[in-house]
Amino acid sequence: MKTGLKNEAEKLRKNGFSFREISEKLEISKSTASLWLRNIELSEIAKERIHKLGVIGRIRGNNSVKNRITIEDGKISANAKKNINQCNFLKKDLKIVCALLYWCEGGKTEKSQLTFINSDPKLVKYFIDTFRKAFDVDESKFRALIHLHDYHDANEQISFWSEITKIPRLQFTKPYNKPNTGKRKKEDYQGCVSVRYYGRQIRQEIMFLIKEISK
Image 1 (spheres, rainbow, N blue to C red):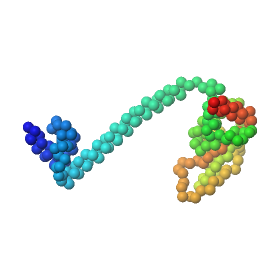
Image 2: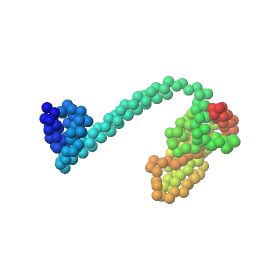
Image 3: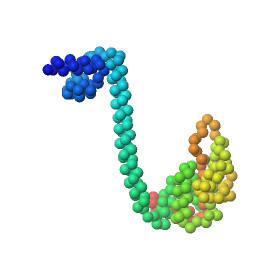
């Protein structure tokens, strides 16, 4: 019986069957199949079949991992959305949010103004929107400066950042043009915006909040 199984295993292997296929077909362990057949010489056709099986197996494995990650990410995303929707931010909470964001991306040396600098439109919009909700701001005290490359159109970029920040174009100062070699052009890069707010009291409140958070 063992000899018959081994002969059948050899035939399958010569026809390009994998150790796993032979193991399942003949109901023997994969290690046994490997031991019996490790010295079998394979034809080019058999090698090609085994190679294709390996490629298909890797593709299936990758797809399985991708599907698992997609399901996991869906659960994480739903939980994050639930957590955010359950948050009822009060004005004092929004001030802390502003302080945390400013701690990361804000200027620290100015004494009478706040300067928030970033190139991510979503982050800039969130900070400015939250800043307006958290503090009693005077819209006339906003100023904005954009940093551009040679390939940017200044008028278009001012309009873009004016829409993001809701700061009127007239409160944008002359754009700063950053030297660019022209070898690399960042796709969808809208430039970097520096939003300034001239208000010492609000600036001090944010800085003292940062100081307390850091403790």
